[in-house]
Image 1 (cartoon, rainbow, N blue to C red):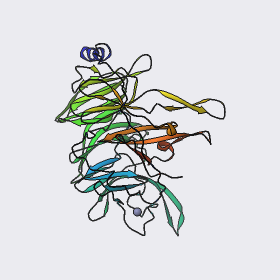
Image 2: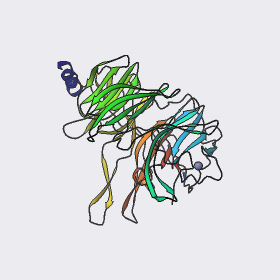
Image 3: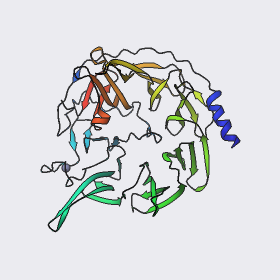
Image 4: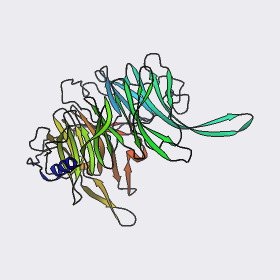
Length: 416
Ligand SMILES: [Zn+2]
């Protein structure tokens, strides 16, 4: 216990700040492409969408504390993207985009489509198969009884080669929290157990993606934990009381990394990058090693969102900008969406992207940076209707791609 307290004190007090000097890198928007398409993703100009295998790639950016950003994955030099209730595939050399369900007679809008009801975050490609969760209401009709509507929740596998869908596991009603993490040939997940009185307890399980066998690894009791990361034979879990891990070969003792209120947490397998909540409500970006030692403050900004590449932590600030007033006269605020980055090894933070003047009402939500591209959920304040448009709430399949070098903006699915 004493050690945990020491670690918390280390994180909170003995921070070694590295000076942040925000400078602007020149990025000017030279093109703005509007795409109106409901059935297919647009064809991407291949010269613009160059393949840069040696660029600064996104690292493991799956954040288990608040959410997982598993909406795109490279596989066999193709970029797979979960969007609009479908998985799409970009050929990043030619710019061709195809949907994984290529049945010309499929409407993609009912149970006949293998991707119907796909949960957009957290799909995974392994061994030429796509693993994902489906959730939808299904109405059974027969001539003998009233139509019956049931909630379908299931973990499935779609074979990219033979285009067959296989149900691996049905997820029963009453599963409260979904937390999952793919590692090697396993899916690790939080399982909800419900007794006859309706009380819930939790356990961490893993399912083998080759033979589908399930093992229960850790019984957690009545306090759920999210699966944060699996790395170097350790499974890291996050709960209200902090971040801790078990050795995958010994589940007898939980080892605490820190116990405090973190806003977000990501890792690249070498360090943890934690947004620590300060008493005055601001967040500090702290780098700690995988055992919870050597906390280093990476910049002085009040940081709101972080994303890791090989060399940098990209972030936006935890600040709001007033863009207008609603019909009651209250301020409408959007997140400050200037994008900064700071070297992981320490150094100056610099501004790398800012929306152009004619898009000052736009903002980004969650994002990842891969090479020169930033992919994000986005939103904007609609002056005419006095409303805040949020892609993540209204249409959670809506993305924007920004070329950080040229400022070119590309909408991946946009409706008028
Ligand atoms: Zn379909």
